[in-house]
Image (cartoon, rainbow, N blue to C red):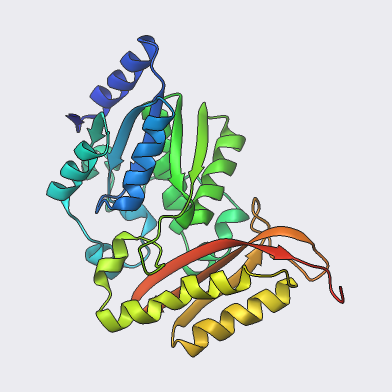
Amino acid sequence: MQRISDLEAWRDYAHAQRTQGRHVGLVPTMGALHQGHASLFRAARSNGDLVLATVFVNPRQFNDASDLAAYPRTPESDVEMAEHNGVDCLVEPSLDAMWPDYPDATPTTVSVRGIGDRLEGAGRPGHFDGVASVIAKLFAITGPCRAYFGEKDYQQMCVVRQMVRDLAFEVDVVGCPIVRDVDGLAISSRNVLLSAEGRSRALALSRALALVGEQPATASEHRQRLEQCLGEAGVATSYVEVADPVTLAASNDDEVGIRRALVAGVVDNVRLIDNAPVTLRARNS
């Protein structure tokens, strides 16, 4: 596995691979790699891509300094995880290289309005501006590629897809299924911050989503069941929503078909998110 930190070397490497007829599969990460990331590496390799993974903890997507400070960093195990799961090139750019003006604001920002303003965006102002800006930079450096994103961060994936569409990046965004632990908890780098008791309560997110996924209901009924399940488990709810799977606009009770249920809660001061498809039926049907 090759390791790169210099931005121009990264750009040259991706370009050289394409000139040799290879397709680049980009997997952006913030490190603390786990089996969810490994599934993205494997998905890229199964598509025949050269797997290029980035590790960069992007400070511009954190609106809470304590959250940034607490974010887990595991550089040695990251290298091992990447090497053992088919990564061809691991890119580890420095903060100075990615954001030369930091901690001052970077003059240029990519903002995806609408999708980026609700749900996570409403509770974390500026979060998706930071996400979209760093992903745009990763795409600009990497060049034409397939980019792999896990559906656990469903809203992030929607934001990136809208940005690619609007700015005409030569990037195919590939969504990959959520990877869950044996108890059903969606695998996340933040899970290591949970106590044993907190982890038990956190299971309410996946269990609530599984419950509402069992049978069709109106959007309001799905929301009520989700809120009830999380409340009974003692999870401090940030939001519960049933939304259009592309725009994430909130669904109403006149809609039918497949939508996305998205939940966020705080356990042990750790913010957790999860989501799943649900089926809507019309009122009084």
